[in-house]
Length: 444
Image (cartoon, rainbow, N blue to C red; front, side):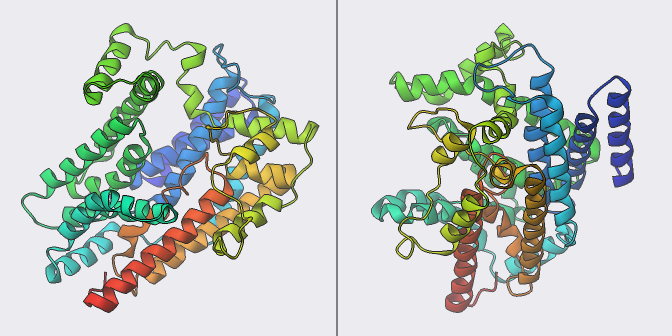
């Protein structure tokens, strides 16, 4: 499907919504959400659409989720919208548009054909490289327990090199590349079920799909079909997750966790609960991150003064300065900012982020928050452009870029976490590639 077709379909949706009485900004926002969702599916297999994936996820969680909440009778006692639809959408939609305008100042050159040629050239010289990366990614989590906790983040990042290894392998002609690829994904799924944590599975599933789509040469229709199946998988995980975690985290379940998870999933589907959840189990609760943003818009207006850039500058200093030079710098987690800016209580062992756009509003208000999103988009566009330029020194660097954006593409994460991850991950990965080049003579 062409970009012009995406625009036409999305524009048509906006006009239909307006014709049936939808709020103007809601209609525009839902059109944008459809556009970027179709765009990301269309780009899979052709480029590395990390920036568009950021926009699509944000649109789904900041626009579609809130719209569903505004127009449904199912409301959670806490996870609901705190301001009216017109007030909310008239801020969020222009903020996302502003973000995209900032990004548009820099062109994306991440063509998978070009990247694939560079990978094949690398593997022609070093055919065993993917296997070392895959093995290293599996071993690193077990080795990390012997090192100080302060290095935990670095080891977490390095454990993701197994996905870089299987991506390299996909571009090769190795006869066992697909069994190894699906074996790694299966291991990730089992590990996610064992821990009750599904972020890695979902994020890497989305990021790796573009390489699979390229090698399999999927049509747009095939990609749409897979996206629908993936959506039902995500809905199933969300529907089962709470009861599953209750059993393995708090009730001391000692049996086979995969069997337990699958039995709960089958039960949800057999009983139809997956389509008729209660207000406490509403699937939209997870999709909708707008409730946090709306709580900020209400509380900061009524009870809390604007931060005027305080948390933004804290985030910048936290990312650029090591803790021994700034012992009071902000820590990742989000609990304090959540309580302060939303005015809502969360348990001490719970962490919720206020999101980039929520933090923009908390600091600068309506117009300032929109301008902040423009500059954030400008920075992200510039950074992505720099990574593509650095590929002249490290030809397959773009293959490694998903590690840099693991936190960045998530719509719920606040500024200090996003920027800290981006800076630290970039320094670590560039340092690793430099070390490999210097010590082993391999220009990755």
